Length: 189
Image 1: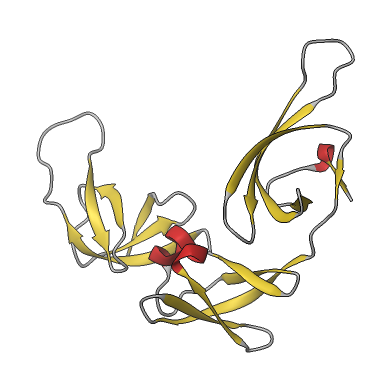
Image 2 (image 1 turned 90 degrees about the vertical axis):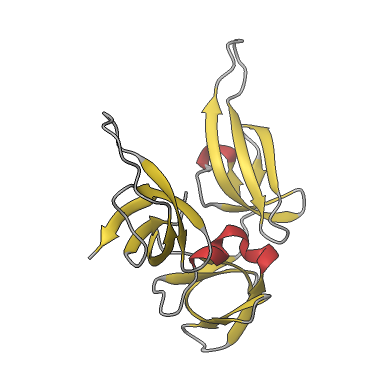
């Protein structure tokens, strides 16, 4: 059992009968004397992907969910499903667009550092590395003009996702993108 005071990002608990992972948590103490601390949490249902925002009083306890991470390899996509291989058992599994969401835009051949997220023996998600290197296939023209701050422009990457990049990036170059929020990190040489 996990007590609310031990909540932190990434912890998996059973909440209202469903396995949930804590996406965000902040603690606040009401001003009234003797009032319990309240944890304002954002939980993601591991089976449906739905986000739930809840305020939970401290002192409550929730059962821990049997969750594990295993190394995985991206094999291929057939357009509707993305196929992976478990790095330990070498069994293949696939996930759909609903399961992956925006993560599908970062999956390319040869990507390293993937982790299969398993709940009670079933793969429910794939965790990406913090950054991936992708080629720029299309970039807006350079923005000319003397400005005090850096200019960003739109670029389309090899997987079809669009990101904002500095004005010096051109088509054909490889860029490093943060998979957590989709921002440009650096140009890869």
